[in-house]
Length: 435
Image 1 (cartoon, rainbow, N blue to C red):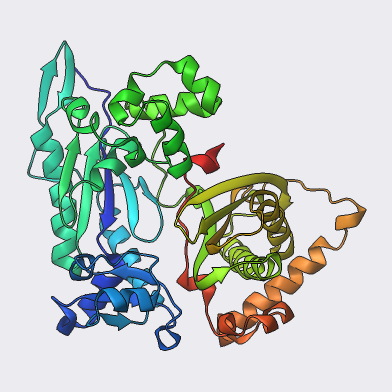
Image 2: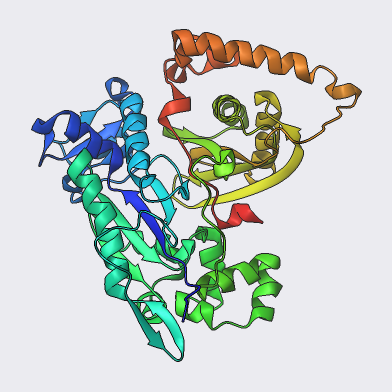
């Protein structure tokens, strides 16, 4: 009897930036440290922290001064993004020795589909069991696969990874979050109801805070309760996304893992920034959104994803509440157009008086160069503007991103010297952004 069950591994490199810094400088071992931007000005944010720093309550997104207040002895390390990219490539090269179905989820996370790998982890042969006439992989076998990946990365590169092993991408991602650092969690057909059912619904992939709040208000505060929910009720509140939520909670996610050479790996491209003081007026918000949009447009061109047809805005207030919205737009890769759409959403949803602490801008819906876009007269100079932005990209590539700034930045001196493109990255969009 053959099984149609998939074996999906989600790998998550633990405290990635901080761990790489320790590999580069072993003297940092055992000490609380945080990788932050612009530490000299005390205005950067925590991009990554060590396990020791976590014990002091330090969180990603804290400002430098907040981290130092929580832990006066914390070591503040400037980021080395070229090294992080190098380690990320080396980790993916290890994964590629097991399967060509490797899909990135940011710089530090990947899904692997090893179901039919011809390099399948010898000498341990697949182990099966039969339940209700169905053939399934045993939990011990699945755990072996995750442990093999995890231990090899640690042995060869000195960085640790947490692995989730399951029969779909959503549960695999969920599993990798359950045992950190350096652990393997199996969520299989044999145990998924026991493992997943009692977890908070917000732990489910793509369920952001807004969706979680709605679900909890409906009495669906756990994944198990969501899995047993009435589909008509979910459709009424979430529309078509209600069906997706139900499928994810029930383990019915069938989305395939992309190929390691597939350029369509990116779900979204974005940047965000936490500011040292509250943003309290529209004029400053517009300038900061413009900075973020410029970095997003530059990264979009670098990835070769073509043009984007959706702009996303994320806003966090000083009380740490947040929201995200999106807008369908004409296909574009231009900074000005992305910024204009993002700022229009900001004005629509953020009403004065307001105190905003963080803003994120991202784009999705990439055409991969396949769209045949005809611009009307008002967009007739699109190609010229694109050529100018690409020329700016080349100058920055040679002399540094922060060395060439637009005039709008003259009113933001604190931002002038920051490489926001490389220091503030957003992972693919959350569930609210999938609407």
